[in-house]
Image 1 (tube, rainbow, N blue to C red):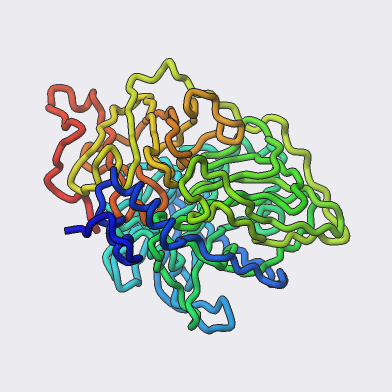
Image 2 (image 1 turned 180 degrees about the horizontal axis):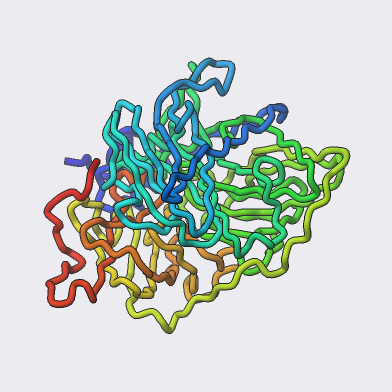
Length: 514
């Protein structure tokens, strides 16, 4: 049994948080925060930003006789030196930490040979990718140690900054934290004339931002000290670099921002509050460039921004206090943190950059086309009062349907929401139109507490009654502890005359495993 919720020992309160019913957890956490002084660790900002930024290499690939572009990824363990304390035990793809950037164009068929050289099962989820459920890389496509999995699909979505990472059931947080992550960039001939900087590693820079907590001997600690959202680290890194500088040689530079942390929320901006152009979010280009002075990203979210610099100028990419909404004791969740991340240093002479097109993409949600509305409430570690069950299908979606999902975080603790397979648009937040920077195509969104987010999406293809997609909180501790559900996309025409499973259908087996 869980101890009485009135216990006043630190460990007792932490245990009560793990055991408490979701309805009681909010009160228990509030007591714990008050009595233990639980807070995020103080950020250790480097004294000097002089280390050259590490740029993940573009993944090698080849096109076979059938026209399929083939990549090879191997997940493996190793050690990486980040600090003078010594080598840190890490994980990576085709290396010891993080992975190469995969790049493919709309219309191409791609295949990835995913080999698992770890001592434990893993998977590779193509976060933000529209593809068949059996190729999604979620918990139903685990790859056993020593095995190879080969998903294949056709790139059928606009240009975007996506990413890939493990998704094994209950073990995602640790594997991502140890270093298994990389970008997947999609190109689209239809938007190639946008004028955006596009030379990878020169004026088009991937930035995977993460925080880590080092121990005295240079290892990483996943101990969260009772923090409800998981580990918040005192050391921040960009592409695995700590205190890095990026030399800029062009008048404009495009930064592809990925919040690759397991829990921390960043509010990106620059020193002196200088403006920049937001040109894309999770699912691709905005309709037009948007001038901003900050862009907030929760774990899993991405944004592409373009910054202009003068010859010889320097500026600092930094994260200021995020707007967490009506969050209880926001200091405990990093809500009071501001810190520098990356120095940008312009050369004395800069190459000219093209003018960015005033129109980047065309899209609009068609609310009248929506035939189904679903409701999702996140609280504790549950969605709609249930924890994840690999053998239960929670929702069944009809092929070709446009749906509205109303999503709400019930309690005053941080959550966000990620949907596999589709990109959505936000119709409203508590009845109001979303701000412009949230009006693009997205697959992950931060849920400000007690506000209802109305999301519209279309399920245009890839029906599979047997293999599900996921929806879940992308704060990875929450996901691992059960804040996830499953949906299948079924074809009513193909199933005509056949009894279809309902939303509570028990599949009776754990899906496809490899």
